[in-house]
Image (cartoon, rainbow, N blue to C red):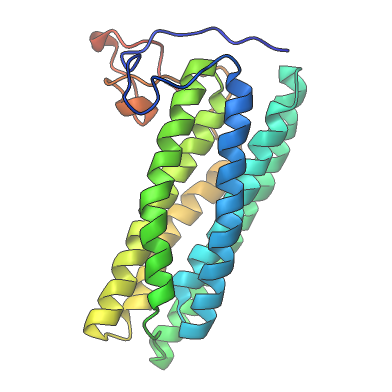
Length: 248
């Protein structure tokens, strides 16, 4: 079993995670990734069915992204099964490149469908199920992100930290989609759904290009969970005497 060094963190007494045992960070990482994958499978089913029923491009795009999240979580789980770091990094690179292409394909599909909707003036109907799903995701996804960032820092697992940031980005997607659906339901503006879907495209393209180019910041990085770097979400400030060097 590969052992990871324990690091100092200013979150040592965290209310959220301070009482959790870290005897086996990889096992805890696997559990969090499994929860992420299982939830996203269900999330994708509800989002796609709701999107089809309401004719909502935003929900359809969000549902498709849920399965990209499943693929990312499974890829990191697979990565953690490798004891040899070089073999694990090679496998990780292949999977991330495949996921990158799926992001780019999804971005192209969303753009074409949104443009068609705007040209034909064929907007979406309101979806109570979709709004409820996105509200739940807005609560659960940030909590999962924090848990994974903490475990990544305690166990020094860069791949988990990177996947956690992906979950943070998906929380933003949930917020964007939620705002669009609520506005559509309250104001009845037919074009809001298409505009909301287009707001997802820049993020999809960025993530896709990073995956295809192999720009993911995994190798040689050291995650942390200190106050100075907002729990690992931003670059550490050397002047603040952060626990470890920044991940990215």
